[in-house]
Length: 348
Image (cartoon, rainbow, N blue to C red; front, side, top):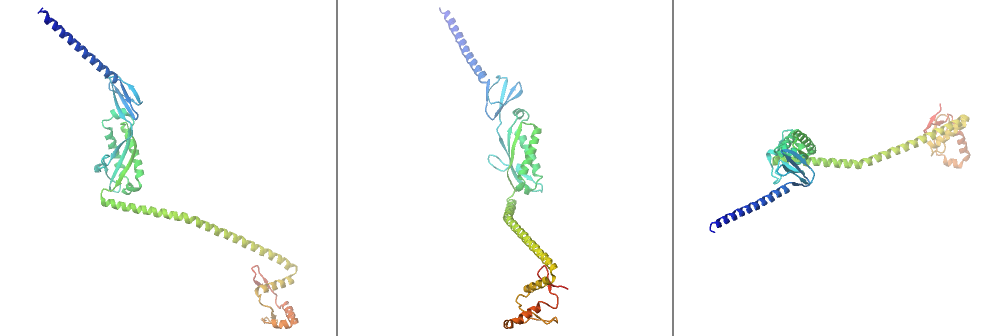
């Protein structure tokens, strides 16, 4: 009896040990199974892309949703494909100036502090992860080199005022060309000048004064153009009215001249028919126009004419007045013939 007791105790110990091993093995199987199950799937969200690596060979996965991978053999790295930003010349979080990055030299050898903000996105996740170790730093170095190259070809006045849009476009073109050569999987979206100012306060005030003067110049030019646009139509309308009045006056004069010419032609035709009567009639009409207030003219025949106020005598002696008028109807000299402009002219 005493010999069998230890044997039974040893058997129980061995059974307990086997039970523990089985439990631990089951737990290990469950853990390994869980790892295999949960490690076999991965989720890609919107604005994300993944790189699936199989024995060191990468492959891009661009479709969103749930995907399968072989556990322990395939590895997944996700990248953010949304638009990201990079500040040059200042700290993006604290907005503090970074002088080594922002101070540049212009074409006219002036120092200027220019801050840029670069917007970019990851276009190729495989190249982004495996083509270079720090692609953002490569982008920063490329941008700084192109920025300094472009700024050095413009004057300080253009950088501060009028040439910002052109400078931004030129820098963007240069950065995109360099990124295409480097092939680091990053695509430039946009680059903008956040701020540009002289490095010292005194120079800054001087440039602000220049800018104010330029704005005043632009305002004066705009006001002048506005005044011109207001007055020019009015002046053109007056000029048109003057031209129309002149044309109307021209037509009136032409019609008057044509009427006088026609009248003269008719008078000349009558003159040809009966010259003596026509001469007398023309003479009397001309004298009425030239001397409308003269009533009686006495000519003694020797070329000396006397103008007498004979109205009282003419009223008392009508027969003498008629006699005098008959004498004046036959002057010693030929009567004057009126010209086309209404003046008298002697016939010789």
